[in-house]
Amino acid sequence: MPPFPSEVTLPLASAGAATGLLGSIVLLRLYKLRKWGWVKSNFSLQGKTFVITGANTGLGYETTKALVRRQATIVMACRNLTKANEAIGKMRTELGGTIPGALIPMELDLASFQSIRSFAEELKRTVPQLYCLVNNAGLAVRKRELTRENFEVHFGVNHLGQFLLVDLLREQLFEQRTRVVVVSSRMHEIEAEIDFEQLGHWVEYGSRLNRLYNNSKLMNFYYARELYKRGFNVHVLCPGLCHTDFFRHYEPQWYHYLVFSPIVWLMLRSGEQGAQNIIYAATESVTTPERNPVTGYFISNVKMRRSKFHFDEPTSVRLWEESVRAIAAGSEAKST
Ligand SMILES: NC(=O)c1ccc[n+]([C@@H]2O[C@H](COP(=O)([O-])OP(=O)(O)OC[C@H]3O[C@@H](n4cnc5c(N)ncnc54)[C@H](OP(=O)(O)O)[C@@H]3O)[C@@H](O)[C@H]2O)c1
Image 1: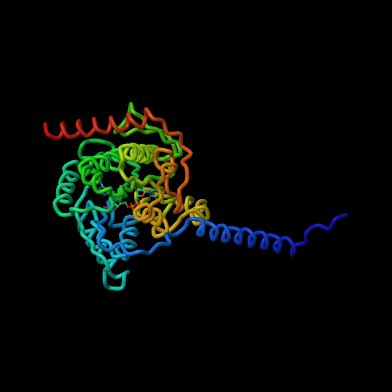
Image 2: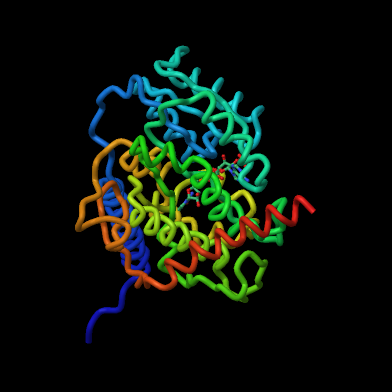
């Protein structure tokens, strides 16, 4: 008869299993850290001007810090100038007391057409040569929130705001072959669609995911596609799941911490690591006739990969047209 595990061997076996599990998680984390990738180039960006929206925190902050360290000039396009100036102070300390390039805070609220127009005017007046525009600012909220022109914020800020901004700068961006970086997300592959019937409206989809956000990130990709087709120097990317202020509107329950902590620890990268994808898009020549937003390629883990989403041409063209219409409608409603 086989021997039963004794009171001694059972705890030993459990301890062994727990150690094995912990070891596997640590190994997996190390593997992921390697896979997520880092930008290796370190050439000077002196004399090059970048505009980064949402530069005061999260990925925008980390991108700004990395580029200014390489002597770039950065226009920090932020909706709150106090926060922008605080971010500059923090960055100065983190960089050892001096900023190698230059930082210029400028006000931009992507939830307001008027603010976007004023920003574009000021930029055209003060920055004659623009190397790169990083459309980074974005949000995800749980409760109904609208922009000044009454568009729900995922559509209004994440998509339409940057659409208007690029449109106002289009001649300069086109003529100077300015790099236009679009920060999308892999969430565009998950439960995302362009819901033309409800475009710009707050919709409760009854999903555990924030589908309005996912839809807006799909719009980012479609938008990058259309810009590329129109001859702009455009790069689209996903930074990966990152530890930033992005989740500020989520209110996790205690058991979420318990259940999801190990998964989050495995999957979550630092803002600095996620920003590598933005830095890569902003400084390296990676798109080719074969690999670009039109053929479904985007930057992820600091290299090009193909989206799982099946993009279709009529949707791509229609989103552009509907966005033009939405801007006209929003502008008209405000002026009456
Ligand atoms: N973190 C992630 O896991 C993750 C994953 C995939 C994609 N992304 C994308 O990465 C981008 C940056 O996100 P993050 O993680 O860095 O988030 P974050 O830490 O919350 O930073 C977002 C930035 O956007 C700004 N912003 C929000 N609404 C704005 C508005 N109306 N006008 C101008 N600026 C506005 C915020 O300004 P305030 O500080 O004033 O609010 C902040 O500077 C977003 O487009 C997001 O969709 C993030």
